Length: 453
View 1 (cartoon, rainbow, N blue to C red):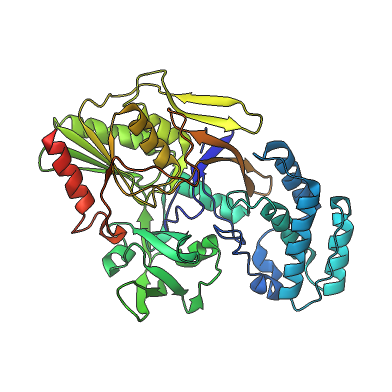
View 2: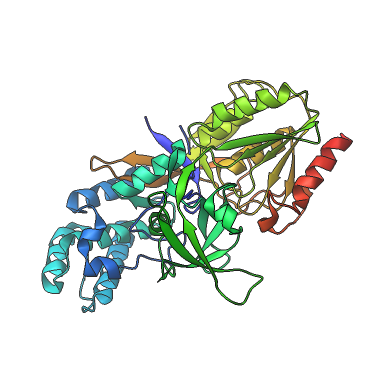
């Protein structure tokens, strides 16, 4: 079955987790959220076995065919060839070799790759990797990526939730801060949370290694490990001019995408951490439990949620939107529009507030935009991220895969939010480090708003 995903590439690393139609993926070795932050090939030049797989002509052809058949925008072969040439020459320079890769046509790529490998002494696998990365980077789309077998497995873990050894943080590369590796949420009760790591902390070093230009999935792999083992971090925080050292002991991180509680005896609160395979059923259970307590209002918190599977967002919204009504529409390369409609659900009959902030993206925005369009909820907090593209996940025989942008999505009122975001109905700005912690004025404001209804 085709999987569509909608979450920002940095959206979920649970070091833990995440995150049909859907969006996010990691990709070691990989480029970061911004295409200007490209792979650091240094380690692979020294030790090609670190690649962990064998890129080749067949994989290159697969990438090319997917771009031609599925990518949202048409792309000229000359543009693709230029991208391949640029990236392979960057690899050559990293290896201290002359930038002599002179690809004129994609028809010559196999001959040129072999010649470049022979003249430079570089692994042919590594040259093919650079060629494939160049092909994909020509799209200037951070969501169209190659997934190694390790990446693909990690992505499946993120979308399915589960458990593994780690410290319990969601990380991303902050587009407003030079793509620095950034914590956007520690999971409550995990080593990171208990040690005092906060949202918007910048992870500058992992085990003494600088994270500058480190792909997010590489960082994820370094943060994960066997429970009981240690990992050292150096953190930069807005409130301190010095780096703050942390030594954390990894634990078994158990991931649940949904949490709920009762506030002030009458307000239901549901926190959605990611939109994965189990989110719909977990949300339904949480909603039923709260409804049994005769709640008078409901808060859905998607702050710091980078997204996940579109189907999970559709299923969540189905508890509000009448059966058969559109929740989101998807427009593909051909211009065809596909509507994803409500299947009906428990039915929410109390006033609702959805909390959003600048890290609410993709499936979070589908949810927020849908409920705002229909008037089923008031949005409160800050403007959302603005991730309105859809990716298809294509598995490969070697255990890896490609993630490629195939569509844009629109809210029920046909709003296009890509690179725009969604404005809240009630603007309530707040330091994101306070979300879910003492001083969470957005949550307090949502409670007060609902009490007045």
